[in-house]
Structure formats: structure tokens, C-alpha cells
Image 1 (cartoon, rainbow over the protein chains, first blue to last red):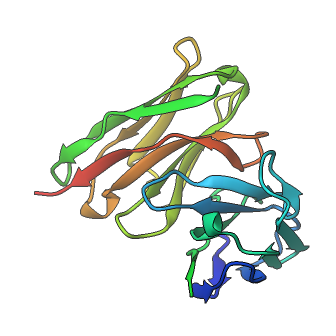
Image 2 (image 1 turned 90 degrees about the horizontal axis):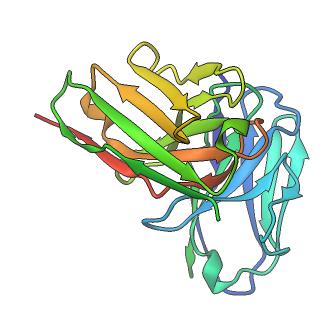
Length: 107
Length: 119
């Protein structure tokens, strides 16, 4: 099975900061990589699919890149609504493993 | 408007069984693959199982294989997860999720139903 790791596990940032989260797969998954945002007590929200495609309704300050084993989620200018936990997930083949998450909180 | 509403969670003893349901509306249910994803208290997301929209192919995480069974009734727009031989470590909020394109990414999620396995 493909394992996913994320770094950092948490970060503190200020409104307006550029934030980058990294996700790594244990084997090449091409661009079969998705990103979700989750706020406490809420269901996850799809942000990016296929590594770099922005889901409808998601602000353009979110972007994704990468292929193979290394991927990044970038928030170009952090907004108050962006403080949350972010998960990557591969969809190369079942089981569709999630990464352990990156919590973004207020500095 | 797409809606996914889970039900069936509750408290069950180790070794027991439970069936979760997910009632779907606002889209052509039979056309989409569906998944169950769980989240233990204070922990991350864990994909549990998926079922295709068309041929009913099913897939499971190793942690639940042989104990859980995913199914769907397209006439009732409902997804199910039959859970048996439950373990303490199965305690979690279970979400159903709609697969955007049958490719393993989930554009709509239900709010989840809590399953607690405890004696």
C-alpha cells in the first residue's frame, strides 16, 4: 500500500503570509493527489484534485503542484478562514490513503 | 443541492455489529462511486471503503477487510456500511463521501455519524 507523509505537522502563520505544505508518497503516484481542508467539527472540503486542479468555488490563493512522489499545497496569502487542518490523499489505486495532516494556526 | 446524511451510529460492544446508512440526494446517485472515510477522535482521516457506481466493485482498507461490507441500493439512493467484529479502534466518526469522477477524490461529504466501540 502507498503511504503518505506530510510536513510540517503543524505551523503557525500570520494573516497575509505565504504558506507551503509538503506531501510525499512512498511510491510514484503521477498526479493522483488531492488536498482537503478540515475545520474542527466539520467535514473535509476538497480544495485541489489531480495535484493542481482547483475545485470549483475554492479561492485562487490555493494552488497545488507536483508529480511523482513530491507535492505541495500553497496558500499565497493566508486569510482568517484558512486556519484549519490540511490533508493530502492519493487516489492512484485503492486503498486511498490520507496523509497525517498539517494544522495551520494563528501566530 | 447535494446532500449526504449518515445514520446508524451508536455505542456497541467489542465484537458487535452495526450498519451505517448514507442517504443521498441532489445528484444521480447511481452514476457515482461512493466511499466511507472515518476519523477517530482527535486523529486524522482514514479511508475505509469504496464502491463503484456502475458495476458495484468494492474496495477496502486492510484494517477493515473481512469485517466490513460496503453496499448500495441505487433505487433508494442509499449507501451502506455493514460493520461486524467491531474493535475499540473502530471508534470514529464515519463520513460518507461522493466521488467526483470515479477517480478517488471526494467533492461532497456528509457530516458523519459517531460509532463508539466500548464495553
